[in-house]
Image (tube, rainbow, N blue to C red):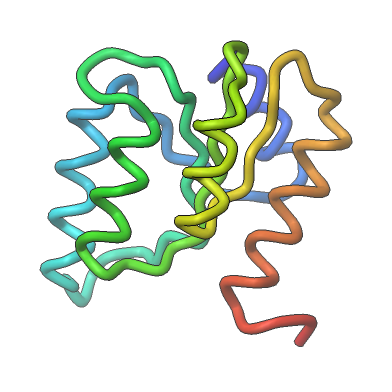
Length: 120
């Protein structure tokens, strides 16, 4: 699924950094918090809910806890009202698998636009 999402976003012109676990993302978040001048800004994080190390919801909570307002999309094959509501309460988009790539593209574009402050 990660390969499909990354490939689709690359075809749309996005620069994609793939990470294989929640632990790797937490290390990336630490780098973001340090605000290194050479860091390429992150416009969006797309995470599965179920993955090794940490759940996507736990990662979203950590991102928000670090006061990073980076747009975030959670995707899952095991959707629940509780996870959906928690994601929305933390300002994240939410996609249930299987989803159409068009839905992914629309959600990604909307989240990036929101992260940049609107329709500018």
